[in-house]
Image (cartoon, rainbow, N blue to C red):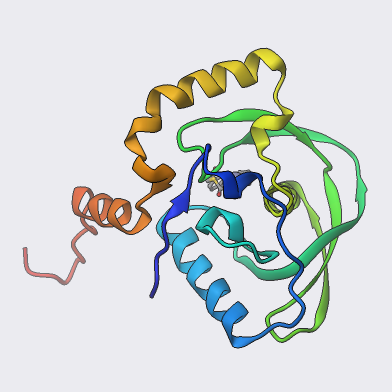
Length: 191
Ligand code: K1U
Ligand code: ZN
């Protein structure tokens, strides 16, 4: 298992365009594997390569047990609109309502290099749009009204000192979270 640091708002890589992956190699599969480990450790439902400091066009999602590793994903069709609250692992503790397409069709390569299409609605559709945005340097706060974005950035500036080097130490956070809330004792376990 490999849990990577997560870059937070202010880290330049979050605003950079990613590079199209030319071939799905073992290196890409290893990156996706580490991104899944990191996403689960951070209790997210998605993660994009720039959030772990990488510039490949790769994202992972796991929404209601629908788990995908996506290489070069793109939205080829969308329909409807829905407003719902979003968070971002790169902007901890900040939330905002974002309008997104309610239904999308996403085309991508899987980790075998095969082309796949995912038709998604609701939370999966939202998560796919959020992750594809990350791959083009866009963040959910970009969609907030001027006043809401200013408030979100103001709150973030008050918390930024918690993240020296503009990274979240995800493995350390997961460890201290586990020690704060130990797993409940099993019924057959001696107390
Ligand atoms: O890319 C990321 O920052 C991950 C982000 C994805 C996301 C969350 C909410 C709406 C769209 C996309 C997260 O996983 S933040 C964690 C979170 O907010 C969440 C966790 C479980 C269910 C719902 C939201
Ligand atoms: Zn995000």
